[in-house]
Length: 123
Image 1 (cartoon, rainbow, N blue to C red):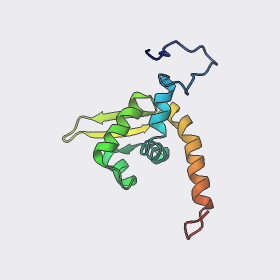
Image 2 (tube, rainbow, N blue to C red):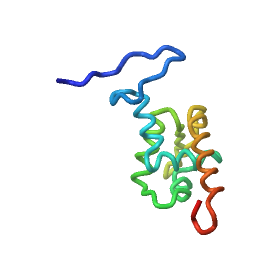
Image 3 (cartoon, one colour):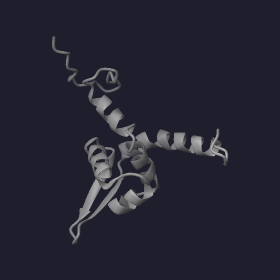
Image 4 (cartoon, one colour):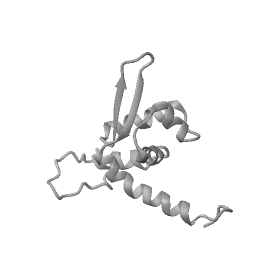
């Protein structure tokens, strides 16, 4: 038996059912809360960054994972991408209004955690 597919339009003020596996909003939530999605959104809160600046600001991320994460966040409408036609091309990323809205509580969470941590690394 095939699972049901949730592809209906949601009326203004109505919410998607993010607990349903085919919910379009669930995909966005998955991208935002992915291992690297959170860090990209938090890093871009200070302003737009070029690809290499973003890569250097997020220690431990590979170029491949950063590119994949950015591609998903751009497709979701959370991040904008601008390419300058230079050699090599310079690519800059920043938060859209939607990205700022979604990133704000993540930033608050990040700030609460880092402010509560003692110098020894314990809460």
